[in-house]
Amino acid sequence: MEIPSIAAAAFDRPGVKVRTLAFLRWIAVGGQFATLIVVGLGLGYPLPWPSLIAALAASAVLNIGLVTLYGRHARLQGMDLVLHLAFDLVQAGVMLFLTGGLANPFAVLLIMPVTIAATLLPARAMAVLGGLAALILAALWVWARPLPWEGGTPPDVPMMYRIGVATSMALAIGFLGIYLWLVSAQARDRARALVATEAALTREAKMSALGSLAAAAAHELGGPLGTITLIARSLSDALGDDPEFGDDIRLLESEAARSRGILVRIARRAEAEDPFATLGLDVLLHEVARNAEPARVPIRVHAPGALPHVKRSPELLHGLANLVGNAVRHAGSAVELHATASGSDVHIIVLDDGPGFPAELLPRFGEPDLGPSKSGSGGTGLGIFIATTLLERTGGRLAFTNRRDGGAQVDVRWPRPHIEATGQE
Image 1: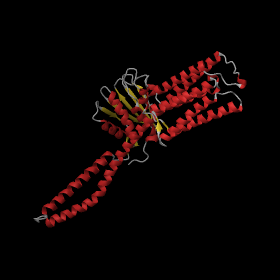
Image 2 (image 1 turned 135 degrees about the vertical axis):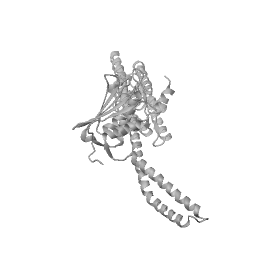
Image 3 (image 1 turned 45 degrees about the horizontal axis):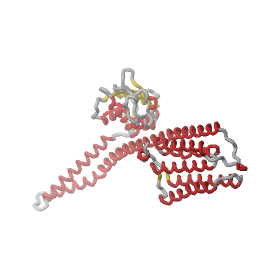
């Protein structure tokens, strides 16, 4: 396993602030030094002071260099972070080697660097540090110096006990490392997906604001431009035949008319893009279908009966658009949108006649990173996660199933008060 590849894979991780790592190391150095003082001077246990002080000094010197060479807000990640945590493991191993090895109650501190790595580094880097911790455990089990004891005669620790301690330490490091890595990896995936969700919402909001701004600008500029047009007409009536100024006046009049036409088109386009703050659910579904065109397969909307008016929110539009886009990508011949409403809830169904959702991934749909299915199909699930997050913000709940006759089905259901607009425009 090559360390450079580990570093390359780790560069997309957030890393840790240099000051935070230095602070944690100072705590470790201070705790180790205080323990040596209490055990060696307070309790009178014999200790190899020169070697122990040298190990402590190595950590202190590295920490001073770390704070000196890096800026206040610098972060360590990738290979740099792997090497620093490896140093902390080795330093703790040396201290334990000099003070009884696995018989020392402080051997549990070997867990700390691996758990830090599990929250900040990818799996391969954590595996390397876990392997290093295992090697240190094996070395301490075989070669550690005797445990310092009162009177200089250490107790006789049975071999079976030392094997049990080594095994329990290895299991603790492995379990905690894997558990923390899984939890932190899910948190990172969710954070990345939420950033993508916020970006989608921001984009939708900007587009909506741009249309409103265009309409407002057209309205505001219409007044001054009307005045210019009137003045140009007056000048044309008075001086239109003048050999010196006639051509310029006619050009001014035509350009004013052309500018007015441009503003009218901008205003009409902005109004067409967002005519109402609320609209019928059937109209909204037709808009989602229209925005997906030109699509690979036709999108059919079925909305019988009276449907409520809903807010035309970016969350609702973008969430439904993601579901429709996913259905279009996998459909065989068509995508269907069905909408129904009762007195208590509103229900939208997105259907396609494709291969359906991978059965092994169905229980995890809505998570930010699904990975490929056993058949090799599927993606990261980011689009489905964004759709789920956006639609749940509007009060909806999603269910993903496969149809009996083939294809996928997504049911989105809202309590009617959550989605129905209180005032209709």
